[in-house]
Image (cartoon, rainbow, N blue to C red; front, side, top):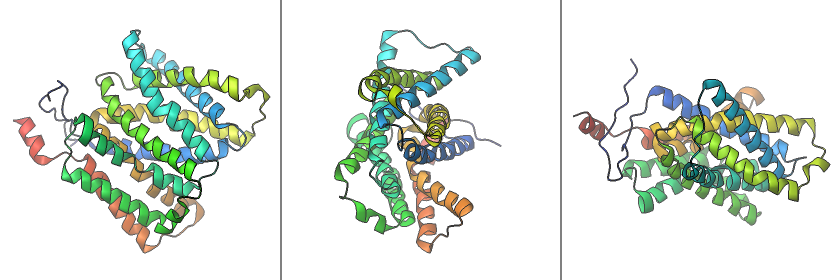
Length: 317
């Protein structure tokens, strides 16, 4: 029997403090990690013949347009107020415009394994921003353990030797670290859209991002002069439909159920998923340290997403 969601007492801001996650939310967290984990491959193939700015401009435009069409089919309307669209614009800057562009640029020189490790640190910055600034979620020792366990798992899976490349392309690596800070801020700011259909902020932020990026792409890259390969075009389609449109809907739903820290924990799941795909489709083998890393990752995600029993009991009373 599926457990019911548990609504806690309102905090000082008037928001619901916590909603108990269900089994389906953990399945969606795994799916989100898979979709965003695949984005690294899509981007790597895409930027071979498409400039980063144009790649991301088309990504946000196509994904936003697709979600808008689905919303109209469902009979869901976008809000028209200026304030909400300002929020969409700010969310777009944190969650798509800046991070998408920086990752696409960085992956021209940064090795995929190193990029994965650096980008998996977003839960750390989410945890730190929550502790220092917003304090909208309980910053417990258990969540701190989850952050540390997840990082330890990443290092064990990929191999500590993969970190030897740090410093070789310092600017690109620094850009990926900046991306993780943006994602942390975006996860926390997403609370602004609590109560909305998850497709509304997903569509609004993507369309806002496209409005920023398309003029820049036209001015800088002159995309009509490009000759992208078939592989890059297909990668761009996969990136737009699966790793952006579909993934964003899941992301905004999980923000409402698992919280910002819990949702960013999917960053830890990207690496083990990539390793598993290598085992299944490429015949790769896992060393003992990698299996130990998988245990650490699972423990870390559980520590950051499972609600405290005492808190749940007090809410039910």
